[in-house]
Image (cartoon, rainbow, N blue to C red):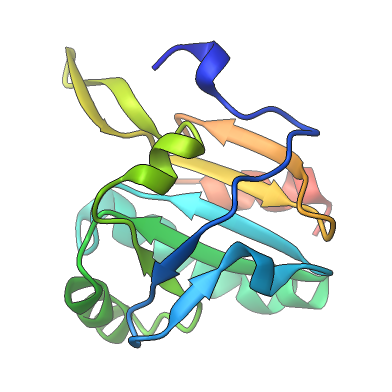
Length: 157
């Protein structure tokens, strides 16, 4: 994926409606009027993704108090993400994008380096969507460790 396929601050966030771990369907429009952090991660129950999810879990109170909801998206099945949520005590929505169409629309799927090789895969990315549905922050190729802390500093929370 090239840089020009990526979302930028001020772009309208692409709408989505995806199945959640609990069997419901969650849409970006459900968050209209409130800021939401949408993060894309490669795979549930892997070390880096678990670290990132638990960091979001541990920061939920502060983020919520500052007016931010959190939603995670991966290509995992709803059943796999349900087990992940339960195992890690995650209370925010985790959504399944099995065909990776939402990830592609957000620039979070494409070419990336993995152990020195160029492969097609999920690009660990985080976005802040403002209450009007515009991209307020677009962070690509983030590191799992320390990412949530960095995001909180950038958001001033």
